[in-house]
Each structure stands twice: as structure tokens, then as C-alpha cells.
Image (cartoon, rainbow, N blue to C red; front, side):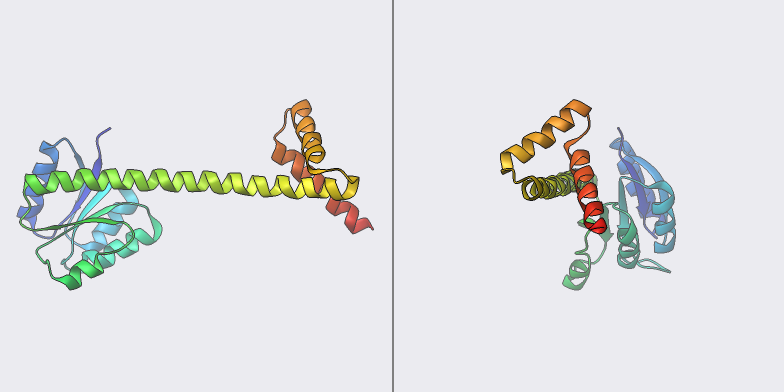
Length: 195
């Protein structure tokens, strides 16, 4: 699938040159803007795979726009600027800013920077997805452990017997172990309230 890119640059000639380089390399430039406000609007509307954005622009600069975009969306941003001073580089160290290109831009430095930015963004999304899955498994495991503890306490069973009983119920009823555990916890808590 072709990467969808929003290009934000206030210098029209430079924007056209960069767009041409990107399209020649097979990328799809789905939106263009000349200021930070329009960049935010396009980011929300188009949800691109990458935003290439100038730092110094009218109305709202690229750093402020990238902060606003990053606060609510997970879109990687490649900063483009004529300034290589340390203050700009320091300010560009934000969550979703994945690169920093100093003008003049050529195919030799633009395309590798875009490739790396897209690759890093993909890697970050993959890691975030794994974290979500692991957190889900951890929460499920906590519920199972709690239910197992209830059975051990209430039935005077050892850990293995409590787990095997839950597993048998799970398999016989074709429901998840977590669902069995939640049922045990709910029953235990309702009995506690009665007593």
C-alpha cells in the first residue's frame, strides 16, 4: 500500500518541488497546506501515514501544530526547516516527531528520511499494539489468580486443584477461563454482602 502523506510548507515553490519528489518516489500526497492551522485540519480529516511539516510558518508554526496533532493522534511527523540551530532541534524532540530535515531538500535526503520515518512509525504502532495485548493478558491473569485464591480459601483446596476445577468448568462450558473466574468472584462478593 502506498503511504499517504500530508505536506505542510508555506513556500509554494518548495512545496511543489517536495511534492514532485514524493510522487516520483511512489508516495501519495493526499493533502497540502501552507500553515499550521490548515495542517491540524488536514491531519484530523485525512489521517495520513506521515506529515512532512515546515517549522517556521504563518498563523501557527510547525512545532505548535505538531504538539496539537500529537496530543490526539498518532501520526508521525517529519520536520522540515531552513534552521539547524540547537533551539529548534531541542524543541522538535516531541513524541511523534520522527525526523528533522534541513533545507534545501533533495531526493537523496528526503526519500531515505521518509522511509525511515514510516518504518519507525510502523515499529512504534506494533510495539503499542503488543503492549495493549500484554496488558489485557495481565488483567485477565489477575482475575484468574483472584478467583483461584477465593476457591483455595473457601474450599480449602491447594492451588493446583483450584486451577484445575476452573479449567474443567471452562472447557466443559466452552467459555474462557477469565469468564469462569469473573463468575466465581461475582458469586463470592454477593455471598459476602449477604453475610
